[in-house]
Amino acid sequence: MSIPMNQIAGMPAFSPYFPVPPARYRNVRFQWVKFRSDSASIDRYLPECFTSADDGECLAFGLDVGWCANYGSFQEAGLLVKCHWRNQIGYFSPVVYLNSRGSIPAGREIYGTPKVAAEISVTMDERVMSTEIRLAGAVVLGLRSTMQYTATASDLPSLPHAWRLKAIPRADGRGLDVLQLIDCVNATSDVTTHVVCRGDGVVEFAPSPIYDLSPIVPSEYLGAYYTEMDYTEGYAEIVHDFLKPS
Image (cartoon, rainbow, N blue to C red; front, side, top):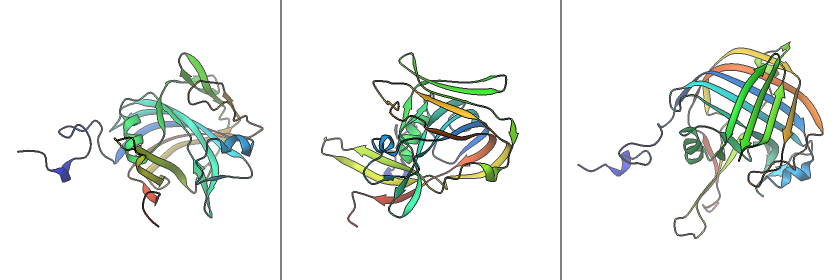
């Protein structure tokens, strides 16, 4: 008996490459560094459906996944930039770096998260947590932060919207098959927070021939945060389909 079309969840059809959501995560360590940069520098990373926020606020992040039911253990890092979609304000992800074979295609195919493969190390050197991303043997993004002050979940940076732009090209080369604005802010549920701290942090971007973030230069640091938590990642929301008539 052949595989019914309405039962295909991904490719290969008889054994999809990654499990479908929800994905349960445990023992995930998050590192956030909040900073400001020049809005003109941020603009070059924003699709034209967005406008950058006047305050130039950005969030660099690194995370260490101890265990995930769908993807195993892996490390991840990236950047969020504050922007506007119509009359709403939120954050857009220009690029996210991972060292996971399963989470990269899942994130791109399901949510449109711009995940790319990289070498990532997450370490603790006394009181400083460090995340480094390497491409072609060179560090292109580095985060370093402390966690010496107690904090609560309400102190963490607020993400009213977590936008992605899901873009999938047509096989015949004639434009795109999918171009959707996705909001992942409500994809996370069943959150258990074990540790929340705050401290000081810095971010360094270095030039790279691919996925280059070096034009974004921090002009002011707004604090750093550290969390340890468990959570479940489900499906996201399709906010707008650019290929369908309004």
